[in-house]
Image 1 (tube, chains in turn yellow, brown):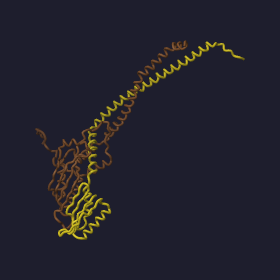
Image 2: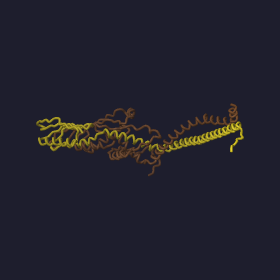
Image 3: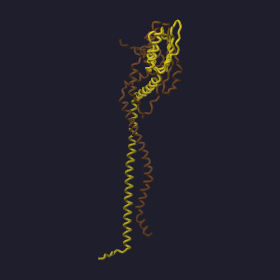
Image 4: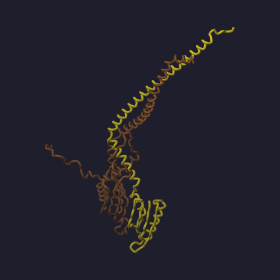
Length: 177
Length: 243
């Protein structure tokens, strides 16, 4: 059976138009609602943030006041820190003459006596001394060899060996730690 | 065309409301949004500051005042705030005297007075003044004196040591010697500021603690023994003394 649409085409067009209008209105209302909602949520977040900002400022002020009560301790700590850095600087540049002198003394064998000794802050030593006999000289030389092998000194120079009536063997030595 | 006009006329209120909402959004909320972004950044910075300050407060609360005072005292004895040459002289004299070494002469190179040297305080390395000594005594005792000097406060360093035999000794190497020594005695001015309040507290590391422990064992000549502060009458006489 064939169906016949009794609504005329003019009215059909009008219905279509109203349907589109309704759709458009719904969309715009929905869009407006969303916009208002977003703005409302944003307002809430914004006021929360400003409140948090103010609270944080208050917290910081309170903490600073509390820290201010420990001014004495802080100044002590700053002094200690400052001194420790200076002490560290001193220890880094300072050379222990006691340790170096102990090492230098290892060289002084039986029968050897030094007449002059000079040590500087670069851990360099110049020694003038004398040996009474050949045996002492030989001992001194072997000791020097031993110390050189042990790498006790980075530089080891026998400068001169001279002989006179008063001091049978006078020896000049230069050392570097 | 007729339909469009009809449509716009029927939806005029809705369109107006939409424009008003969009207008409010653009003119009121957009600047607020920029402001919000700035506030958010500032809150982040504030939170960091709060963390630092809280940690600093906790650190400060946990400090022992007695320990701090002791460490300040020790570190100032090690590197005094000024050229304290009286203590240095007494210390040297004390050590040499106890070791039985004759201190025949000493000379100080005091240099600029402290107000001038204050200008140099920015350097990390401490200032120093020079001391030259002449002495005579046996080598072993000189060695002990040197060791004691190097382990005494205020900290000093020996730049040059010269020993010359007084006479030729055939009995051995430990005879009497005359000597001279150039020393550096260190000092450094105190820091003038504590730094920003939200700056982290300086931490004393364990090697530094160990260094302080070592320094506490160093010899120090106390001038308090010479000038007792207690028992000295100061001010007017009490008219009602208790007998």
